Image 1: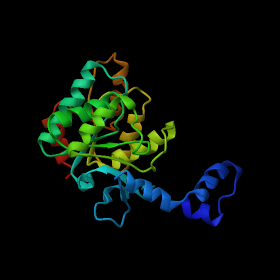
Image 2: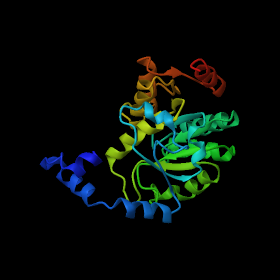
Image 3: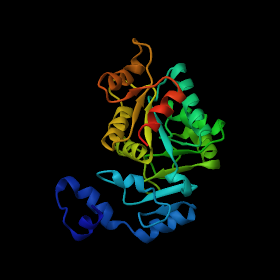
Image 4: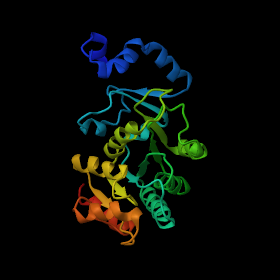
Length: 254
């Protein structure tokens, strides 16, 4: 897209605003901004580049990283789910995160409220490594209420994004962000999700990459577990009820 915009290939009215923004951007100023903020700018040529994301149909052309970029290739589990979890879902997300980091896995999630938050917290409390994949520039604390959590994540882990500093959140960026969560991880666990949920998109992305997908069952009348039950019912995810159960299933793919 960048080369096409510079060369003038894209001229449709639909893409006019995007093309204009790309053509007016100054790459040197963007890199200076990244350096001043002490972020890292990774491309596929860098030694810390997580080559597992290259399996995507549309891999990122670069990543900005805050924290320890060396951990991006660690064996990791993605834990995703609803932004409005029940106490049951909060506890499960935290317990599974702690259980996996105790076994020297990293935990990957999206830094959002809800299941994401409790997955990151579970890993932090267990003094493990966790990675937040965010849909905004790294200079923007989004959501603002997780600013303290982001600081805790950076003690051992990292926060990454494929968009540049100053870029704010829009709905579409969360869906494209989800594919990175799936690609970075060896496996994906959905804890609680509605029948139609962005977390299900992450699960589908993981399945397309031939990565194991797991789901936590919930009460049959719980709206927040409908998505998990849908994945299990469609045989799109393996039902797991404990950390050893999940570890055994994931190990069968190694």
